[in-house]
Length: 282
Image 1 (cartoon, helix red, strand yellow):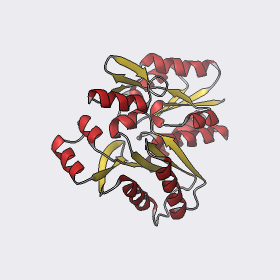
Image 2 (cartoon, rainbow, N blue to C red):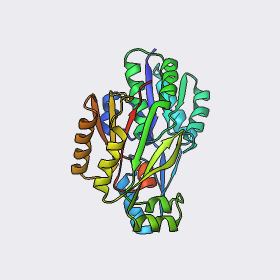
Image 3 (cartoon, rainbow, N blue to C red):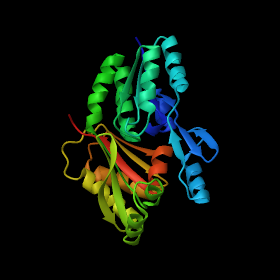
Image 4 (tube, helix red, strand yellow):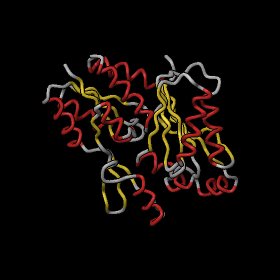
């Protein structure tokens, strides 16, 4: 039986990748005041920046509702497909729990908690697509991808912690101190949760290169199939420098993919955030 791969919009796959791998996307919702919009189609990161600048408040995100998932799953089941659906970590959103309810009602649907966000989830989704292309069943894909989720290494370095402060993830006093000292925290996804890692100091462009170097240098445990450079509002120049540094440190990468982070990462981290995301070897 054919297998359809579906993800929610937090996987931050570019429109080109969505088309190339024929992925169906179920959007989350972004709430900005009285306006409720679908992530990625009706709301973009630029809308978030404008909202924050105008209100000094962060938007909220909410999971797809049960009917959103039922519609997505039933569509493909009626066309004769098995379905594997991938969600942002259950610790970040109720999206996973709602998708599981819909899957139990529809049948023939496997739901995978990626234990990740952004292209940390996207890495798993693309792996699933490649398995489906080779004829794997929905259960085979889901089982392997649940194991693969433990091997994803996802992190971002953040220019300013103002968005983290507004989101209640650090105190105003800590934010003031960090900004005065020009500290740039690294945010890591560990066991499905966001945690603060190393704090860098200095100009964000230099910090980004230091961060990339520390993530990739002298590593022999990295799966060199693909790596994502995922960012918010970073210049083409710094992205190209990151790409060059990746090639210097790990020349064996088959694919270096660039994506712009969507509304979820943007609302957590703000502009001038950049991450390199990849999978470790089994």
